[in-house]
View: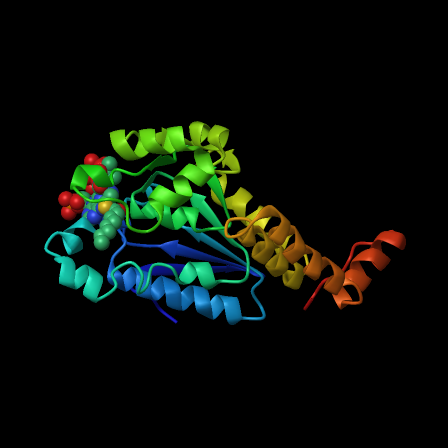
Length: 258
Ligand code: CO8
C-alpha cells in the first residue's frame, strides 16, 4: 500500500516506517498520524514482521506537530474532535517492538512520538527539544509526563521551560536514548539491531514489552507479580523448549514462527 506521508522499507522480518514530509521537516499532521496508525497496526498483525523501526529523514525525525495546520484551531476543534487522542497514540497499542531511530531535529510532538517508542537510537546529529512554550501551548502528547520519567524532573523542566535542545550525547547520558551512532551509519546499525531482535521469539519480545510498560503504570510488587505470571506461563511453550534445548545442544536456536 502507498502512503502520502510515509515511506515503507522491508528488511526481512524488520520493517522501516519512515515519516516523509521533507518540505515541512516532517511536521506531524492529521494525515500522517492517520497513516502512521494504519501502517503500525498492519505490521503488528503481519506474521512476516517481528520488529518495526520508526524513523524520519537525515534532517528531522519530526520538528513537531504541524504549526500551520494548528494555528487557527480553537477549543472546539481540539477538544471536540479529540486532537492528539484520536490518532497520535495508536503506537501505544502496538504489541511488537517499535524502535525509534532519530537523526536531526526531534522536537515538540516529534519528541513525544519518539518517546512512545520502546527504545531510541540516535544519530550524532540528533537534537531533542520541547519548544511548545514558544508557540504558546503546553505539550499535548505526553511531553510533560514521559520526559521527566526518562531524563529526570530537573532536565525535563529545563528543556520544557527554556526550550533548550539537547544533543545526542546529552540524550544518551541522561537516558533518553540507548545508543548513538555517526549519522552516516545509524540506519544500518539500527537495522542490524532490529534484525537481531527479530531472530528472538516474537511472543517473548511482546511479553517483555508488556511487562516493562507495566512498570510505568503500577507498583513494584504488582509489576513483579505481573512479570511472574508470564515467567511461569513460559514453561512448556515452544519458545522455551527450543531456547533451552538449543543451549544444551550447543546450537543456535531457531525461533521461526515462535
Ligand atoms: N510545523 C509546520 N511546519 C514546520 C514545522 C512545524 N512544527 N517545523 C518546520 N516547519 C517548516 C518550516 O515552516 C519551513 O517551511 P517553509 O520552507 O515552507 O517556510 C520548513 O519546515 C523548514 O523549516 P525552517 O526554514 O524553519 O528550517 P530551519 O533549519 O531554519 O529550522 C527548526 C529548523 C529549528 C526545526 C525550525 O523549523 C523550528 O523551530 N520548527 C518548529 C519547532 C517547534 O516549535 N515544534 C513544536 C511545535 S508544537 C508541538 O509539536 C506540540 C503541540 C501540542 C499541541 C497540542 C494542541 C492541542
